Image 1: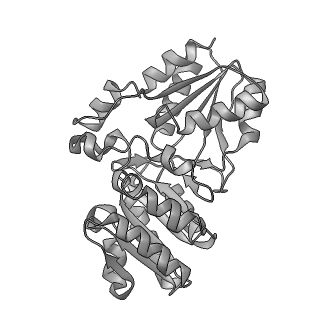
Image 2: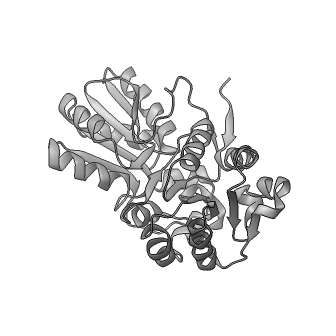
Length: 308
């Protein structure tokens, strides 16, 4: 039976693991540590945990300050608050100086659910990927979250790691995590589906449904959005009739835009987008919202067939 894990809980446990190994690890949160699971680090290392209250801009500015003194700072809150109101501090205080700050944002996308539009970050990938020096990772499941956090802790400079709220099934048979290198979960020659985060599961379901209809489908997990793996995308463009991109984010500025840039410049091929189409979120159950915003496996199947 495939296990399901909260990526944010995996994050909290990984922070504890890192804290035991490296005294330079410090963790910041802005009054949401029980939800982001940084409370697990606070429990074991209270002297290295700082709660800034509802003052995210101060949190990011202070993160830059401690990083300038040699600390490795993990700063967390919901994705909406981690990227929107703090953009100035992230750009000018953290990224401009290439400081060692790891922003791990939870509760991204519409599957935040009943919290509604004010808490559903649909623009955060776009906001982060355009800043120089920032690296952007969207893990597909719990184990990949741990590997991404461990990598970010050891690598220099700023990272943005995007996590959701709901449990996600662990994908079996993945290759070892390699920052900046995507991988194919299934091979196929008719269509390529490229996904990140929770949409990888929907892409796998869609791929299985397409194969039952005799359509050969390649599913690629693009866990690192910046730097993006251009090689695997160019290969997919050359070897298939088109690419479907799936993301729980606006279709503007995120994974789809990054793929459009690579394909258009290197091997023009039709790219269709599954994502939130220039709308705000709204309250609802995660499953109902995935249907409302056309982010289901059934939607991916329909879109893929349009490429044939």
